[in-house]
Image (cartoon, rainbow, N blue to C red; front, side, top):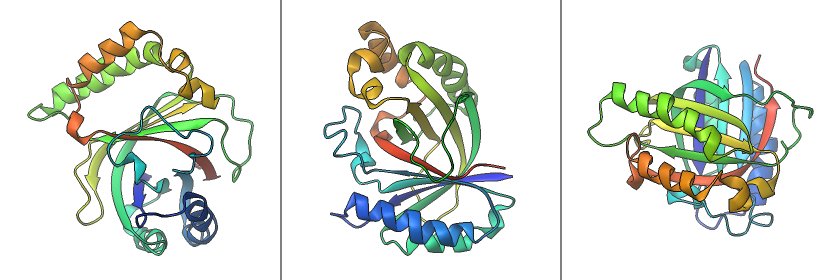
Amino acid sequence: MEKVIYLTFPQAGFDPVAYREQLLTEAAAQILANPVRGLNMSFNDMQSELPKPMLLLGEGGTLGAAVGIWLDSLDTRAPIEAALAAAGGRVDGYLVTESVPQPCTDRDWEDGQRSPGLTHFSWFDKAQGIADAAFYHAWFEVHTPFSFDLHPLRWEYIRNAVARPVTAEAPTVRVIVAERFREIRDYAEPERLFGSEELLLQSAKEAGDYSNPATLNSVPLSEYILKSRC
């Protein structure tokens, strides 16, 4: 099975609610008409609930949706990309390997319903000039364990290592991360989001060990699991 993540960037000035509904109805129906093993859609539609997110960085403000799809084979992706492109704007696709260091173990909502809370979604390139071995060591073995202390109220952590882009002209990205928080206040209130000011400073200091800050993008998203992975 292969996982592909698509990042969509609608036309400037798009209506986030209308765009969400378009993807949840038209695009999702077309995608699910294909033999997909799982489908998640997360949307940049939280302006009314979180008008001033403190971790809105890079292209986070212009992202329309992050779409995660599991396929038996990457070769069958053409109709999926066509469905997403029909909504207008840019579509960047990436083949990834997924790891879940912190799974959600108490899900109690059905497919198609909005997931509780929000997802802090980030994507970026690795630090310049760093070898892959050092990059993965700093990200997997140093930062991942540390992130549990940095975000003590985090509910789920999904870590996607990008293997390669699958759409033309997609920017270079090596890291795509989704961190879910059970309640919006767990993300909106700094004293709940971060374990301590000291840990936050340490995180900022260590970020350059594996990431390129110039390529850092992040945004809070609402999530819909339209087809649980099987």
